[in-house]
Image (cartoon, rainbow, N blue to C red; front, side, top):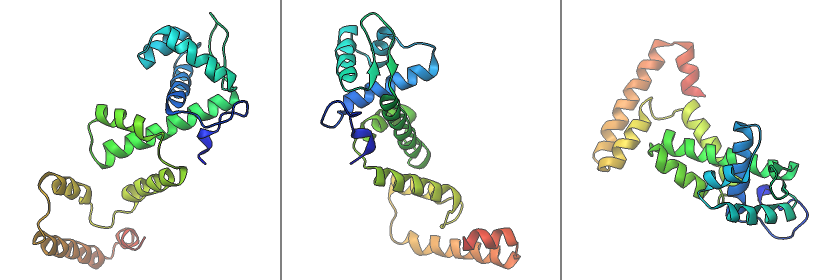
Length: 189
């Protein structure tokens, strides 16, 4: 079970994606300003203040926030863990969507918000490792992400593959023949 799905011990059952969104919003607001108020959360979530108050009661009953009517909102340690994890997930997914897949930032933000709730921890870690791999250890030439974008725009007829393989092989041989230790290590690692 995903650690962000546990409810902090007081209430059985997993957290809903809406609960996680509220905890993420409260976490973000807490990072940006001294105090978090109901109206700040309502503005951030795009809902009315009574809706926020109702959710805060639910989150309070689960031990995730400290809140009394007409007072400021504080995350408990458990609420902070969930909010921080949702922020981390959101950031990783948005970075993948914009940096690797070249999705426009507004769309990436919306889709990362939906995806962050459904991916298992293992899948998210694999995606994170893949992003590091793509950035640190490119295997198909320095411009393979550009080639991916080209493939997405027009497809890749099979007749292009041998030509591209030959170009990459020639570039690789040139790097090896230069015998620059940095280049050789980059190829081998």
